[in-house]
Length: 140
Image (tube, rainbow, N blue to C red; front, side, top):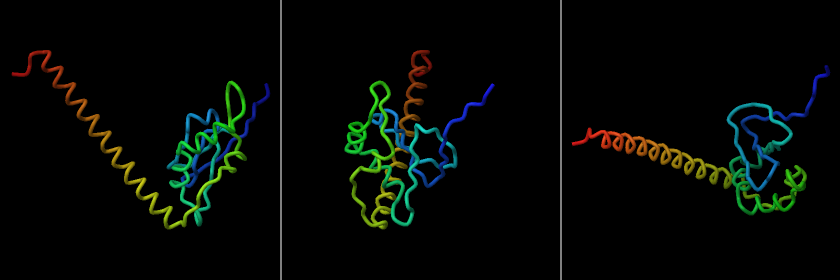
């Protein structure tokens, strides 16, 4: 029996990962580890002296980019966008200092969102606990 071989890409913490299958689903990830991905993922390695990965990821998450990618995808059942088409996206390139400032703001907002989500989850758990106790007649 022959071993099947496939192409794969490696990535690290400085990479932006973009899912090229069904671009309208807007699959953008910022890994915090090294790994290997399939060819269905486009690993984008920013030039760290010129760009910030958080800035690039936010551009790719923007609805304008999603529409751009969706319009340029090919394939009826499983539409995909090519890496070459992704590179053709016309975008802005502010100074690295401005990109870094933007990235810090985004990271702060994301941390606040995670805290809010954790608080909401804790509130739901407490509410459900109280509800259970109320139905059992344990509250007086």
